[in-house]
Length: 394
View 1 (cartoon, rainbow, N blue to C red):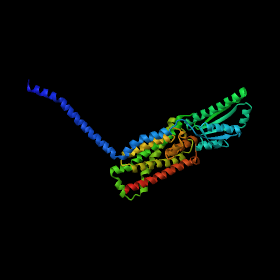
View 2 (view 1 turned 120 degrees about the vertical axis):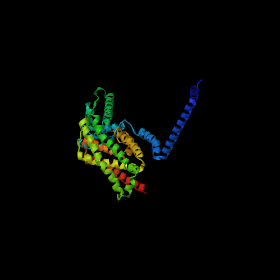
View 3 (view 1 turned 90 degrees about the horizontal axis):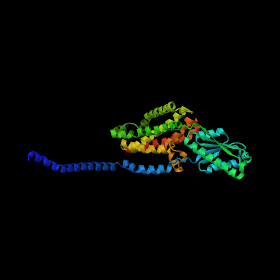
View 4 (view 1 turned 90 degrees about the vertical axis):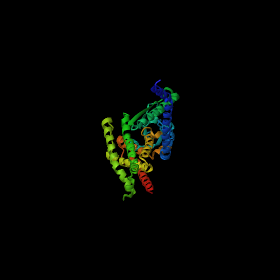
């Protein structure tokens, strides 16, 4: 046997041993990198806490809060009959759990004000001599006026009231026989009679997109300065804390207004979404909303050490906004505790504002409570951001 053949045979015999050694070395290097990554993750306590808390908090929060069944819809009553029977029918509506009676009104103009301001979503109209028609066996009509700016409410509100009217008619049929009257319920949808989803969704997208972009952009502002090493220059500059915070916000306000304009124009051109109310009023409220989101992003940036952490906090904040603000699921269907929690979200109030102005023609007085909520949130976030930045300097 030649020397070359002997060497080849020896290498072939040693091949499994060399493969095992290479595999062991590769696994050792892989293990070292994995251990290093785990140690790095353990040092980043904010990221570790978010990874653990995110699924627990969101599963508990959203599993408890999200309910697609519309209940406790605020309702007003225009009772022109004023009889015991008409009041009993209104109380029966509330007993179903789908309606919360908020009081009586004295005309259609008051119904319009209640629906436009958001104080009510449904109005029950009882015509004159309604009880007398029931006693004489005549058809007794009722009208249900529903706010169509939220299509999710319309079908539930209409079907429940129609079912109650039918049940009352059958009850009287059993009691009186063929001479029993028939309660006829007619549903009238205001503001969105065709129940087009685009008319409801597109104005809401203004708030969602502004929240997503404004919070994320500014959340990385201070963190980016820290990573680039330019934060020290800002510290030694003559800028005050408030000036620095406002200086970080102002450039992005114009960007937010530009985004809003783009969405509204495309919504009009592509989906024929109307803007019934005042454009100037809508933009005035939008300024407060954009500033609030920018202040929140800055507050996140004072908490985060890196841009990655700032982005993680932004994503953590975005999902509750979408699910709890009323953008995707009926706000009235949420438990009271979740409704109070959602009041701390600027998007909750801006959705009511943009839909009220665009679809209902709501005015300043109608939307003043929502504007006050947004203004209070903005002031609180600016104060917290300034205090957090001072603590970082210390």
